[in-house]
Length: 226
Image 1 (tube, rainbow, N blue to C red):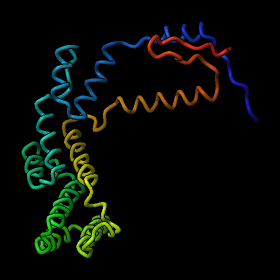
Image 2 (cartoon, rainbow, N blue to C red):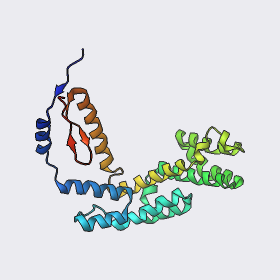
Image 3 (cartoon, rainbow, N blue to C red):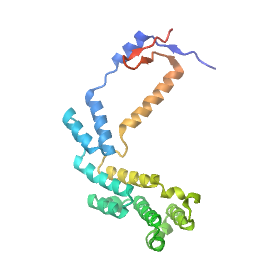
Image 4 (cartoon, rainbow, N blue to C red):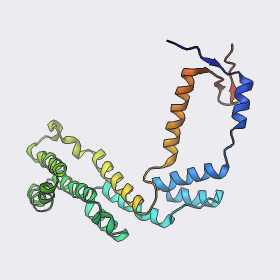
């Protein structure tokens, strides 16, 4: 059974909005959290000076983390692994899935560069033993090796492994692991809050008529009763 929507007048809406108090320090921390998590080190340094907001990790570590991420995105997986170990050897030692995905990316790069013999040897010596211990790893290995069976990867059912998106996926996984090792959230808080805001607005749309902004330049509100 449908229920009638509640009418919230412009005056009542304005009063409710004014009653909401958001501290500037809280919004500053949200911005800093986003900059640090996403790796915008220069912006984080500038924001620190302008707002007086201190990040919860050493900003110097952002540069190292971004170097790892950039290496993976460029296909330099060996360099990325070396940089990760320089940061913290325990990251890969305690995360077999991440290490496998990095090794899988190494195999993909060998195939991309047409090094078929080297790719087969690498798959057999480095990845096959791990696949024997983990069914998911074995399935991922089989999909990757399947790339070698196609001269035209555009017709290959697993051709997406050679897309840039695969590098980005692996880079994102490494980035999250490094953040976790630094006791930092692997995802920024701001996008999650925006998703919650959209959900709340959708709920409000279903239950009430309320003033909406009808002029972005002046932030004036419409009258929902009209």
